[in-house]
Length: 387
Image 1 (cartoon, rainbow, N blue to C red):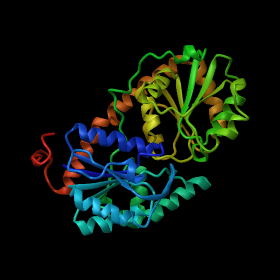
Image 2: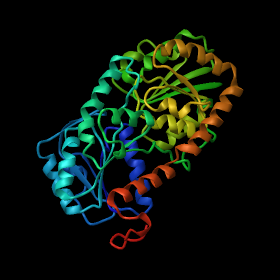
Image 3: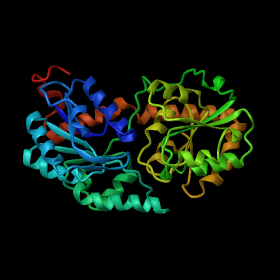
Image 4: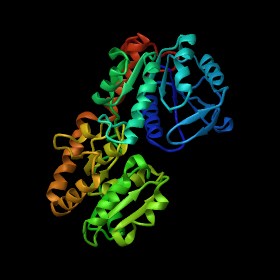
């Protein structure tokens, strides 16, 4: 089945990782994929009749959060889809005005349309940031009602969209998935290099919604000992200012952004505890990757993250007063290594049970089959070769 995937390749964010992992897995299963994304024209290949075309869509501005396309981006998209003739369009929504044009474009071309909708959220609307995200869901809901299917990551997210008017039958829950052949427990030399007996890790953007400073305050106010380190992996708009107040004197190491996947895996394998203090989330891939590597996890119940580690697969915090909760939890993890080991084992088991990439892609294939109305086992792959 030929999939036209509309997503992101830059700048790096969870949407980029999601698109890369899913499209690579679809290709591995024999599905031709054409990747359409916002880029300069010379940075992507012109559409060709091959298993993986790459098409650039013109834009004025793009960030990790949203994209501003040019006025002609809709025409470029329509011409590309007319040329490619895919069986289905799957949009990993990039928070751009093009998201709202897609149903009309695909209806005109008679191409089924699927969306993955993953803006972060906090279902309890407990703070200004989560209220802003709630408005995003309110704004998108009338347009998502015109997609053939909308993929979300959790029951909480589905219930929210259905309450906002998206038909229940059009919303499908397919959680993020992790490649357990790459992400699994193993040895790492990092703790030795850092002279750390115990290593706590945060991996993600350094931005307001990630609530990193609440974690840093808790760490600074809790005597953790000279050989217990907190490693901050990532970058973002708040990094420079936070480094001025939290540093090596507090046992905090600013690693920076790491693009190499294998090095990120080595960091997770070295970690004893992974911390995610976010105010809003969708379903954190970094959290799932840490769990797959057998790391004990502490995370807020923002988005679907609370569902992922509830019932003993990790420690769940409320998004209110993260600093106060961490001041209790950090020393508990330091003083009870047997508990940390057990939580790591439970985290790995939870991923194996619910959040593997293999399961994710199988569910996605069946959804595609339903939308295209062609039984998956009977689909004719002769045009593209056997899967």
